[in-house]
Structures are given as structure tokens and as C-alpha cells.
Length: 278
Ligand SMILES: C[S@@+](CC[C@H](N)C(=O)[O-])C[C@H]1O[C@@H](n2cnc3c(N)ncnc32)[C@H](O)[C@@H]1O
Image (cartoon, rainbow, N blue to C red; front, side):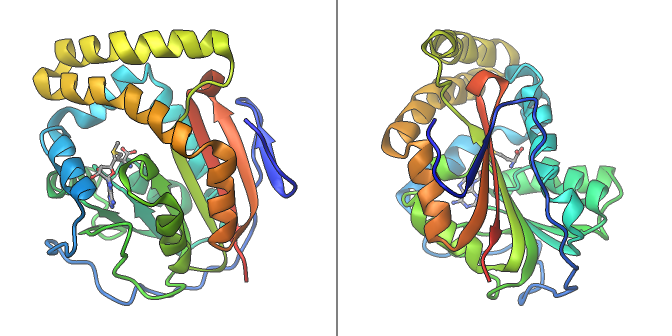
């Protein structure tokens, strides 16, 4: 993975940096609603909804099992960048079953709004929010990352996980994400990565092409076989089209500065963070 001038690149096991900002206490322009009609869905959005709609019931358990417990570590590493900044209002994009939103709320004390494209994922997310007695602090809304229903600079911080592989134009989506963060606010993300080392990439390839679909089938049935078989090629293709250096450039073009990049678990995961310029 390459880097450029104002990019911090870290390997797994090293702490990232955080920045302290005062909380603004601002609220999103539009209030959270339980059911929102999503306008202008693209073909890719429709594909994504179909992929994720059957998964929510087993999602939380299988996301940990099939990532061999790494997802939990990676989430913590991402939220590490939000925790110190004193945010009072955080947006979690591609919030799914609200795992990141709940962790962010618990660790920061901030109000968290989670937004996601797939109603069934949000439905499970609401169950999780209720089970954690976090209804007062975490609200979930339906919507697209490509066109967020919030005003400019509405949030003190923003997280997004496993999102950019599901959008047509990652650079434009990043610009939209950055738009709703106030100047100086933190943006942090998490996604899979293809390991840079050829040795580990070979093992990763075997895992994603063989173990993941078979493990998905055995633990979750045909729907999880489908997602298990989809993931490896999707990750490979995403980084072929958008290498990490290009993604860093998209962040910068979106007006995010002090960008940091941390490879996780031998390069199987990628945590990024930065600060909205202003
Ligand atoms: C792998 S899940 C991750 C869920 C959650 N962030 C987590 O870490 O458990 C990816 C989520 O991204 C959502 N998603 C994909 N494309 C999206 C888009 N364009 N806008 C909003 N959400 C999207 C999917 O609906 C799905 O819930």
C-alpha cells in the first residue's frame, strides 16, 4: 500500500491518533423516521438490498464467525478515532444492524444516527437498539449514502463501514459523506482489504474463495453461501479499480485532511480516518 505526504500509514498493532474537538450539539436537519422511502435507488443499490435483505437475523453472529473475530477488533480500532473527539452527534453510514452505532454511542456518549439502504438490516438494528436500551441515544433511518437527507455540517463526526464497495462512484459518495460533517469533524471508516503481501494474499484468496462460501453455507445456508461467494471477488475488483492510494485521494478531494490509514490483521482489513477541513 502506498502513501503520500499528509497520510499517516500504520500497521496493525499501532495506535492511531485522535483529535479533540468541542461538541456542537447541532441536530440533523430532518428528524429520524422509522420508515423512509428511498428515492433514486441505482441498480447497484437494488443489488445490495437483495444481497443483504435475507441476512439480518444471523448477521451479527456470522459477521464475527466468518471474520474469525476480526470484525470486532476492526470496529473498535475505527471507533478509537471517534471516541476522543467529544462529539455530541455522530452519523453512522451503512449502519446495518447498528453494531457500530451502538458501540459509538456507548463509548462516546454521543447521540448516534445510523443510516442504511436495507430496511431488513435496519429492522434488526432496531431490535438490537431496543435490546441495548439505547433508543434514546441511537436512532436509525433508511437512506442512501450517495444522497444523505441531512444538512451541510450537521454532524460532529461520521463513521462508515463496508460501504464503498457497494456504490457506483466512491469519490462522489465520499464528497457527500464529508458534506454533512462540520469543519474539523472526524470521519472514520472500516472495510476489508486485499493483503499487500503475496504470501498472505494467497492465504486470503484461499479463505475468501473457498472457506468463506463453504463456511457461509454450513453456518447460514444458501443466502450466506451467496454472500460468501460474492465477497472475495468483490473486494479484489474494488481495489483493482480503486487502489488505497486512489481512495486516499478521494478522501482528500472530498475535503478531508490529516488522513490516516491502518492495515489490520495482516492486511485483511483497512481502517481510515481524517478530519473535515475548515
Ligand atoms: C456489510 S454490511 C455492514 C453493516 C454495519 N456497518 C456493520 O459493520 O455491521 C453493509 C451495509 O451497507 C449497506 N449499504 C450498502 N450500500 C449502501 C448505500 N449506498 N447507502 C447506505 N447503505 C448502504 C447495506 O445495506 C448493509 O447494511
